[in-house]
Every structure is written in structure tokens, then in C-alpha cells.
Length: 554
Image (cartoon, rainbow, N blue to C red; front, side, top):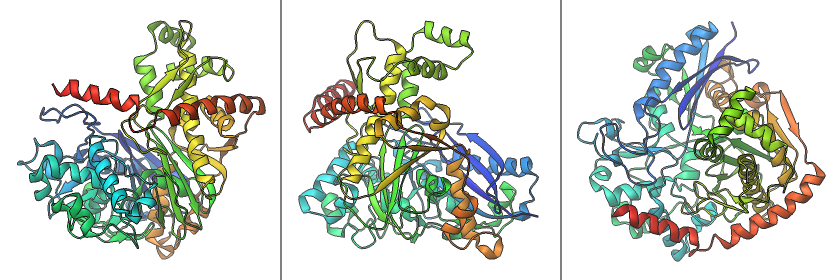
């Protein structure tokens, strides 16, 4: 009987489990479990109100994925639990939670259930903007070398700003936390009983730099209680990509229908799992994991300091290479916002009459337009700017609106804005020496929206390969589970071997249209003009946000 490996992909709204044939890479089973509590951005389950830009989750939702989806993929496939040789996990990052010494989330303890800061902070929790600014400014003032590894700015989405927010606003939670964990590492603990930090989360989101992490005196200057945070509350050993974190423990094994002793890989950031899942094993190919947001990843044999990148970490995406990350904080989220809030009823009726979803209908109508026809240009900052500005206080913008502007024109302008943002990221990498020869797109969006990918090809000037395979991210996690198992158990001894054997082969390509490229070059220059003029420290967007925050605080 062929052996199989499990890949678990924890996303923003749900978790999915795949069962993968270790000989062919075929998906033997797929199951998705929606998080019953979703994203907690208004109030806790007990009713306590949350502040502006908060985004929390419920840790029991994560465990439900294990208990629901793993038995289901076994049932679907008919594969025996005895033939499952490994488990790999990817998770959104930085999604973090405080736990006690036994690994229990503080939010599940009676004393902390009603305290917001005890709950897991989702990656898009942006309420630590002030803390991120303080972390960045102190490092810049002190000339800290680690800051250059992160493009010159630390994001509010990362571990240290979130910890600092907890310390400032609820020191009782900080004191009670034995450690702060990436949620992916916590799931590994649930399965194995081992505390291991994954190198991608620690390196890209936790300010861990193998040879130059911030010193205790830097943290002490940030806040006296943080002086030894790296060796106390972030003290766990770092596990390399594809390494074995531990083995499945009997108690949880019985609950999820697996055999105790199965190797479990160290976790990896969800978008990073899409690199091996896309079949990319070396430098020169930028992988775009496109969904609610987009993560841009590329490998290199050399380290370059790229202003505005999210980070560069040696071995942080795949062993043997410097891994680079940049990203856009909202892509699919922008399109969803538009459809939910800005499309009139008559357009919904037209879509229904045509037998199409509203997104498919808008794609058809927007696809009938030519570049520049709408007279619109937008900035893709609905959820702030992650790269290259690292400024969560920025907000969206559309210019060129008239009384004749139609919903499909706006829809297309928003697609174009996200493509312009990606081009700006690509140019920032290439001008600094990071080679990019081709683009590969995976995730939910590229397969759903052909217009989107053609616009991306026309805007960037690159041919784009779209993976037809489903569950590329979960497949990447499964590959790492196969490596944790090793060849002797029916897996693989190295990550490149697993990629070569299990990579998806069905693809579709999009090529730039020369005429569209010329028009988009002009529109892109306008995008850049807006991008640069509205990203100054005292820009109108910051002032508007300040007014909003003052009014809401009254």
C-alpha cells in the first residue's frame, strides 16, 4: 500500500487538511473546516468590546480543524491510519498567543477569558501600530543592524509590537504568559508536546536573526520588562524548515484518528509553504501566494538589503537559500469589500439573470474594457501598506471618479491597483540585486479570475505561470511532513527531493500584451506619483486616521 502524508493549512477563516500520496503527490483527500468563531474584530465571545483594528481568534477553532478534517480525509480516501507517515503544518503569521507553562492558551483559563489581550492575535491585528513605530524608531535611532534585514521598518503584524502592546495595555497578561507562541508552533505543541519555534516565523516575524538578533539593552530601552524577552518568553529552540519537531502523542492521536509516533514537521508560515508547493526549489522565481492578501517570495544565493521588504532570512523559506518576503496587506479583501459595500442592487440582479456570481459578472464586464478606458487610478492600501512602505496607517484611494463611472470600471481599477503594487515590489527587489526571471501565482484568486492574471502580466511585463493544482499551500506543508518522516519511512530525506517528486505539473500561462503594457506603463507612472506623494510621514491619510481615532475615542 502506498504511503501518505498529511498537510494542514491554517488560514484566516478556516483550516484545510490534505492527504497526499508520497509517491505521486496526488491529493487523496481534502477537507476544510471553517472556524466557528471566525475573526473576532468587534467583541469577544463573552461580549467584551474590542478596539479599532483588532483581530483575534479562538484557539479551539484551530483544534477543531484537527479533530474534524483529519478523520474526514482518512474516510474520503480509504487510507489506513497506519499508512500515514508524517504531518506538516503551515499557519498565518504572525498569529500569536500567550500561553502558560503547560502550553494552555491564557484565554481559555477562567481568570483571563474576558481579557482581550489573552486571546490569539491574528496576523492582521493592526492595533499595535504605535508599538511598531516605537520598535522601528528606537532601532533606527540606535543604528541597530537588524533593522536593515527587515527593509528598514517593523510591522504592526509582527511578534514584538504585539507583545509590547500587551505589556503596555495589560501587564497582568504579559506577566502571566510563560511564553508567546506563533499559532503554528502552538499546533505543533498540541500534536507533539514539544515547544519549537519555526525558523520562518521567528526570523521573518519575530526579529530573530541568527547572527545579529537585537541585544538585551535594545529591548530594555524599548521597555524595561522586555530586556530578556528573547531568552524568557521567546526562548524555545528554532526548528529548521523540514525538520522533525517531535512525534504525535497518544492522547491527541486518539482524538484525530491517527497512530501515535507519527513524525510532525516544524511549522512554516502559510505563504512560504506555497514555495515548495508550487514546485519552486531555487532562485529566480517569485512565488505570489494570492488570496485575501498577497505574499511575494523569492530565493537567492546572496543576501541583499532591500528597502521596504518584509525581511530576508537565511534558510527561512527553503534550506540553503536566503529567503525574501514582501507583501500586500489586502488584495482579495479589497475586491470582497467592493462587492459587499459598493455594488448596487441592479448589478446583482444582472449577475443573477446572467447565471453568474457577482465576481464573475464584474470580471466579464471589466474584461470588456481596455486599459485606461475608465480614467481611474487607485492605490491598494485598504489595509495599509505592507511593502514597500510598511505603514499600516495608510488607506485606500481612487482618483478620476465622475458621474458616469460604472461599478465594473471601479472593479477593474482595484485589480489594476493591486497589480501596480506588485510591480512596485518587483522593481524594489530587482534594482537591489535580487534576480527575478519569472512569476508563479498560486492560491485561490489566480484560478478564479483570469482577468486578474492577465492584468498582472500586462502591468508587470512578466509571463505568469498559474498553478491549476488545488491546495498548493497545504501540499507544501505535506512535503515538509514527508521530509520529517524521512526516506526510510516512505518519505524523503531532503526538501528538494520532496519538491521534485510531489510538485504539481498542471499549469496555465499568461503573457503580456504589448499594447496593454504601453498603456499600463503610463498608468503605473501615475500610481507611483500618488504612491510617493501620499507616503510622507505627515500625509493626508495619517491626518484622517488621527481625526477618526480621536472621534471614536470620545
